[in-house]
Every structure is written in C-alpha cells, then in structure tokens.
Image 1: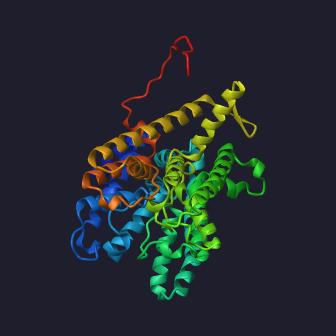
Image 2 (image 1 turned 120 degrees about the vertical axis):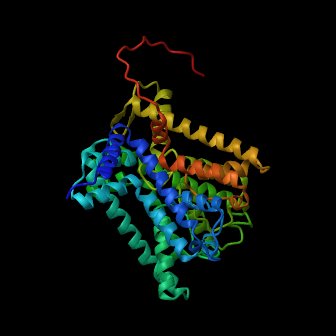
Length: 456
C-alpha cells in the first residue's frame, strides 16, 4: 500500500528533524500533547458544571498533568468532571512515560522493530547514549510502569473499599491514585485530598514506596532488574542515584520531622505513630510527587527552606521526577571533595568521572537556578506576595513537584502562564531545552592555549 505524498513528506520532515535535533522534536511533541490536553479540558464536558473552563485553568492543568507536576489552579476533585479527570490521568501517563518513549512504543507496535529515528527520539528523552540500549529501556519502561501501577492499585483499591466506597468508585480512585503516584504527579481526585489519611499507613505507605521507585529513573530500574543478584555490577549511574537518593530521603525525613514534630498546626497534635508516618510522607514527597497529608502553608519557614532545596534537586535522571537530578548533585559534591583533597580526577565507586560530565552538571544546575530566578522575579513583580511563598511555588513548578503553600489558585492568570512555562521547561529538561534552542553546534579544530584565572 502506497503512502500518500503528503504523509510521506511529513514523515520525511520529522525524520530530518529527529536526526538533526531530537531535542527540538521532543519539545515540539511535548507542546503538542499539552495543546491537545488543553483543548480537551476546554470542552464543556470536562467540568462538573457543564461550562467551559477558563483558558488559563485549562492550559495550567494540562501543563501540570503532562509535566507530572501536580500544581492546580482549581480543585481536581470538584471542578473537573469524570471526563476531565480521565483526560488528566491520560496526560499524566503520557508525561510520565515520556512523549518520545511513547512515540517509540507506537513505532515498535506498528513495525515490530525500532528504527534509527525512533531510537534517536527515545535516546533524547531517556538520556540513553547507546542506541542499542533503547529497546531494552522501552521494555523496562512498559514493564515498570504497568507493573508498579497495577500493584499500587491492587493495594489501594481494597483500602477504599474498607472506607465504604462502592467497587466502581474504589477502582477509579485507586487506579487514578496509582498512576498519579508512580508518575510522581501529585494529582488527587479525592475530596479533601490526602489530609484525612495523615495517619493511615495502608494508604500512605504504598504512596511513599511508589513515589520512591518512580523517582529513581527507568535506567536504574532496568539495571537493578538485570543485576539485582550482583550489586557490584550496578552501573556508576545506578550506584550514584541510589546512594544519593537514599541519603537525601533519610536526611529529609529526619530534618522535616524534627522541624514539624512540635508544630501544633501540622504534626504536633498527632499521636506519635502518626507523626512518624507524617514525617516519612513529608520527607519523601519533595522528591517530586507533591502529595501532602498536612497543610504545607502551616509549616515552619525552616521546613519550607529545606523543602525548597529537596525539590530543586529532585529525583533520578530519566525518571518521572523533576529537578536538576540527584546524579547532578552527586557529581558536583564529588568534584568539591576531589578539589578539597587536591585530586586530579573526580572518582566514585572505582570509576573516574570525565570532565564533560562535570561541565554538564554545572550547566544543568546553573540553567535551573537561572530559570527559578527569572520566574521568581516575574511573580514578585506580578503579585504582592512575600519572597518565601513565591520561591516555594516557583521551585515546585520547576522541579515538577506540585507541593504548594496554597497560593496557586489565588494567583492571576499571568502568573499561571509563567508557572506553566516553568513546568514545561522543568519537565523537558534544562539541557534538552538548551540544546533545542541552540542555533548551531560548534566544532573547534584549533584549541587555544590554556590559562587559569583566579577563582574565589
């Protein structure tokens, strides 16, 4: 069967763009999915009132869902109809898997093989450098996502049944929450949110575990699944991600729990067992999930500052989490240690980290901090809110976390557009965005003589 000339021309154009700049195609595809979700959420059927949602709310919610953030300008449980909630869940799933990964999955289903273009696209989205690994990574994405989401749903649905919900409603709530949890989206369609379950171990513990696994990244999940019997054979990326991720999680649980332990507005009025669970929950959620069992707006400013730092770091590379990523933080910390010791090379777990990786880590951190700074200045100009709450909201948007002090619904439309752009930049990746916007790449044949300026 011959392909129509128009479709053939379109496919050839996509192939050329994919080969020359997969990052630009990734951004264009992400933007297209956001546009489609916005259009669907703008339909009268998407709201409980049957009226069209304001455009600012539709585009903000669509961006937040596709970018698996969880910030909302309207209440998800009461404003959106079942149709609107289904659109949000599908957008979360697409955003979690990665638009480029999903494109490769569809290509594999049609042709039963992955071509060069699809491999390039997925390599851009999942940060895989060896094209031969993309097929295995896609299978890991599918297996990990579906398996973890099904397991989470199987645990959560019975809990909703015990709370008195009918089977259909329990399955819907459990399935939505499972998808939102594993993809670190933070959307909740339960009226009252997660606050009623602050001491519910059956409800909160699966969310904690699902968030942690979803935030480590698909390459780590794949590597652990292949070499779990021999941890010594884990890749350097896996070792750095797991150790840094676990260290940050333990530290955040202890510090946030300590700050809020005697705060009567959050943990202080709870029994000891509930305080422990609330501390675990609040310590893991800044990884990027964005769920909260207490009012974040009532937390101490010291807790906000700690949460800011955790959200900015985020989770693992090629994961459903946002931020600059834990491997970026690990490389920079290792570089500081090497410099303090006077070592020539940056080393970890018996391996040497090349200078290109260090430069990339510095660039990612700087671009992320710059985006946060620009957005903070914009919101300070648009609103009259204090710096601490603005900074919290901005970092949450950039890191696609979704935690909020409660100001997002009250922000003007212009502020929602700023946060939407920031969520988009945070999800697509700072280096992907930089590569997509670069006009050309330079290859220097002649290298200039080196000279060391004074630092510090």
